[in-house]
Image (tube, rainbow, N blue to C red; front, side, top):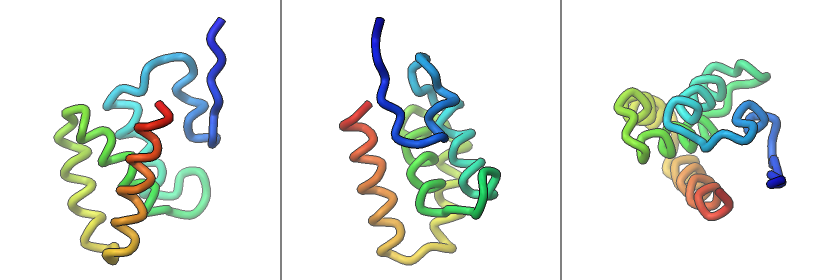
Amino acid sequence: MARYEIGSAELAIMGEKPAGAEILLQLGLDSACGRNGVADLVAAHKWFNLAAMKGNREAARHRQEISREMNREEIAEAQRAAREWLKLH
């Protein structure tokens, strides 16, 4: 049986399924609107970026929209977080 390390509650919805574009898009939407607390644009950008990398056009559009509300440092932080997530998953 495979063991998965879950770094946050957001990832728990994935279970043992691969992180598909739709799941990543939903995580971005949840982060952007603060569904699990306060809105987190850095996390939303990260999830939208990952979903866009898997071909989700809607995620790419959302990423572009929230980028307008973020400064360069926040965008860089989101990009680093996406790269780190890719390394781990």
